[in-house]
Structures are given as C-alpha cells and as structure tokens.
Image (tube, rainbow, N blue to C red; front, side):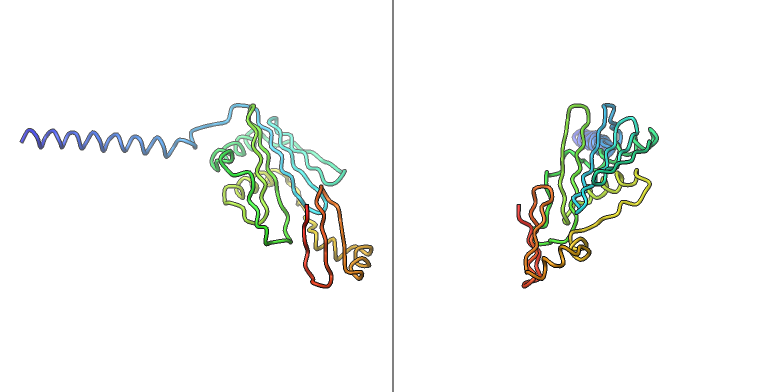
Length: 192
C-alpha cells in the first residue's frame, strides 16, 4: 500500500514537471523580445534592382535603380516586425534556398542585423514558410506597390534585345550575372 502511494505521488510530480516544461517551451519564443538595435535590408533581384531598408527608428527607405524614397513607420510596426523575426526563427534559416530548375522568377535576399548579430538568407522560388512570413511583413511596411519587372518581360519589351534575339543569342550583365537567351532552343540560361 505504501509503495502504491509513493508511485502515485511520484507520477503526479513527474506529470506536473512535464506540464510546466511544456508550457515554458510553448511560450518561449513568443515571450522573448528584441531590445537591441534592428536593421533590415530586403534586396529584390529583379531586372531593375530594388531594395527596402528598415531602420530601428522606423525609417523605411525604398530604392529602385538610382531612385529612392523614404517614409517613417510607427514604433508599434517595428515591434511587430521584430516579433515576426523571432516567431519565424530567422537566424536559424539556411543561407540559401534556390530551385535551380526554375529560371523565370525573382530572388530575394533578406539581411537582418540585431545588435552585433547579422544573418542573410537568399531565396529563389523554393522558400520556406518562415522566410515568406518575414518577407510579407517587411513588404507590408512599404505602403506603395512594388512593381516587379522580371527578366522575360525585359526581353519582350526591349527593341535592341528583340533584334539580338533574331541573331539567336542575347546577353545581359546584371549584378555579376550573365543572362543568355538562346532563340533556337527557347531556353534561358543563367550563368555566373
């Protein structure tokens, strides 16, 4: 009888400890907050390079080619961005996610600095959900539409490129990337 009471009490204590452990772990990341300085940069690897920079004071700067514009967002919006970064474990993401089989998309690089810790993640097509959540949050801080001009659109709209296509080969140099369009095979090849 004494042995049964001992095991019953031991079982209750173990269940209680497990419950406390699960509650602490479940609320772990959500209860954290970023108190250090935050710097975020989103690079959009489009045929017209773009970037969106977000500073800790709420300054948001959008650059497209050689043009730039800036706005100020609230401290609450910066706090929500910081929480999104924590909730989606940005610093544990791999440095690159790329589907090399897809050739007609726009890649994104997110670089985040918190205090003295910096991490960059490049994503092209096959992006994890966490990357997508952070990307969406960053872009939501810019109140204007960000127009994407993908490489295939640039090929169709440029008269000089159209005449080059009739020769069967088109080359464009953009951010150390050579883009070749072979008209005979109707394929685009990206070569570094």
